[in-house]
Image 1: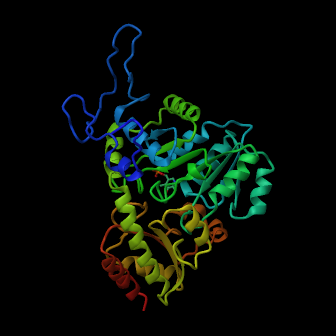
Image 2: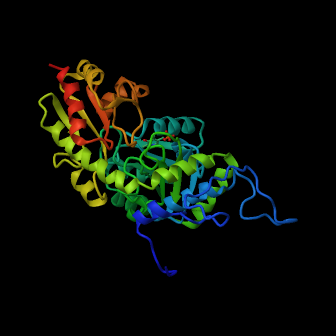
Image 3: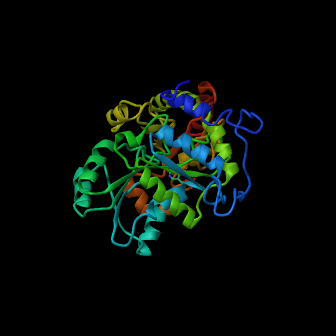
Length: 387
Ligand SMILES: *Cc1c(COP(=O)(O)O)cnc(C)c1O
């Protein structure tokens, strides 16, 4: 291989860091648990000195994620929330942050709590509403946070269009890419400055690690983020990074199969008489279908649907469904079902849920790697309880 060889994304995911062990030739990357590293001599630190500031496993995962997202570098954090908070930590009391009104519940809670402590100013807006967004941009925000597709209604916004307008207003742009992963959407190529991830979800993909990452387009921003992560101590554990890199190996194969399964399940749900609406960007009926088709390389493996029978129907369905597990989280190899009104979005309160369009009969699915016939058989068992 020559120096100009540029591996494709699938190759990066499968092989970044493979067979780089100079001690024993291990093919799978070794795990470096050591909290501290020997200096080479007086005032001569080696590449690593202390595990909070740097660790080979974290760097290996971060470099792979940065390459996949097309960024200058990454900081691997202990959780997805820590990744978002790391970005928020770059801003101060005079800065205005504009966030989506329907962002992830934990992000909503973090933003509101930090703003209440006057760490920055905050506006929640419906970013699909161009007038509302322009009104917020007229206040010269420092950061615009984007989340697309949104949770749990899978609303899609145009990242490139928002980034262009945000930059014209002097704002930086961060995109939470957790719901799709870089296998399906690459926000930096669409103009974003930062990508944040809960690596807990599709990137690790096996529901056995909590973690996060921030990827920045600009090398100077990576250094700022890395420095602040060391100051506040939010970097992730070596073993979590090691496991997440192992999960990342199969990202492209998992996403390809999981979104194929999701398309089959969405089409089945759309034809079911007990379902009043299916929210999946891959359906031609979805309002964000055209934007999703243009800015994504697929439609992902998350969806939600409304039951005509409301909360009582949702309760009966989740008790009777098989194959799917009733649980929060998403992005693993196993299929999950969640009832946002009583689970992921319970803290929002009934009125905020009503405004956001999250009904009591809404169910969210994370589609895994099971045989699609079994997924539909599991759903059939659930729906059979409604008649
Ligand atoms: C899960 C999630 C987070 C938070 O990540 P944790 O790893 O649970 O801290 C942030 N954003 C989105 C979109 C998520 O789904």
